[in-house]
Length: 117
Length: 103
Image 1 (cartoon, rainbow over the protein chains, first blue to last red):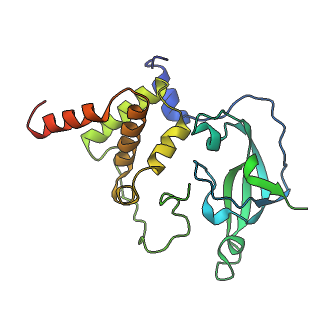
Image 2 (spheres, rainbow over the protein chains, first blue to last red):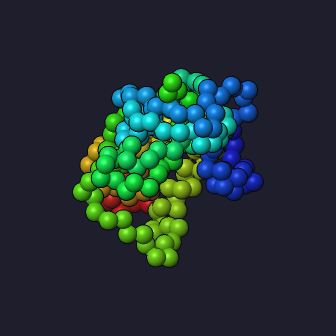
């Protein structure tokens, strides 16, 4: 069991326990790609909010490789993969009553997305 | 998990009123919960995803009426009991001791 040292505490507080990992995993998408969020209702942990499922967006930025929360929360391995900032229009998420110029960005893991062809 | 924690797009919870000059801790016990989290997370008893999921596994009413650090405390109790660091019996006994004026 690791021991928490005094020097480690400020690092932990600053990073908030980031799960970024230095693993050579190929990205499935790149900036500018049109993607659709997979529709799913898993009973396990996920960082994919319900309101984004089935919605279409555009990949804006690749944040790099992170541990996959959906498996990591259940001791089923890290399954490291890319996380992207995906931009959605408010109207895509909320319908025609939403302001027409508003957008929302969500950080989404590779396994939550499919390419729109 | 489609739990009550996934609040995005839900109606009826009223406005969000950020507190001006919000202190880091509102009560001394919150400072202690923070310390226990740092010690047990840093000590490798669980990972950050297990911690978040433990909060999601709170009962719906408890979750919606609980404060930020009450969520942390609930997650700590769940995870440390599941991982055999404490037992629910120990926790109940200690609470009883404190209620009856013990230290």
